[in-house]
Length: 143
Image (cartoon, rainbow, N blue to C red; front, side):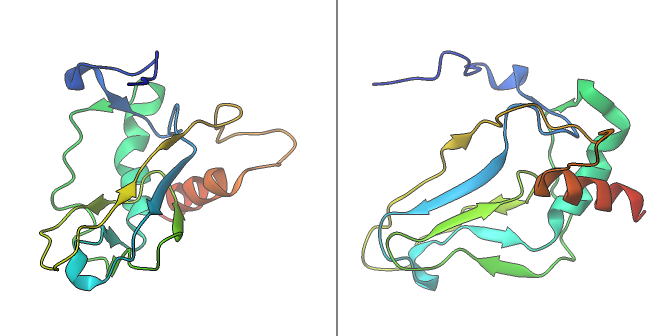
């Protein structure tokens, strides 16, 4: 079994910060057809804005044990359904969750990590922000 040498095995050591250190995107790969009854991932549309605002006061240090039970609960819900081969590329702060499988066929999916080519920065002299950086900046400046 392959493993990531940088992976934190102790959940209590895991932290997330406002620049999404170590994660460029949330990716959901569907390896089988996924319908509403096949336990698609639930996604809170726009919740990345709420998480950015929640994380901002913690700065680069970030937060551990982030439990956003009520964060984004007023946001619309979408389901990650689609045909085998569908890939969802999402903001890394997007609130998402599993749900009970009510179908007859198993669903196969993966959520691999995607490391950024360089650390995300919310201040750049050249203004050449990535789409993820722009979304975080917009969320923080629209408070």
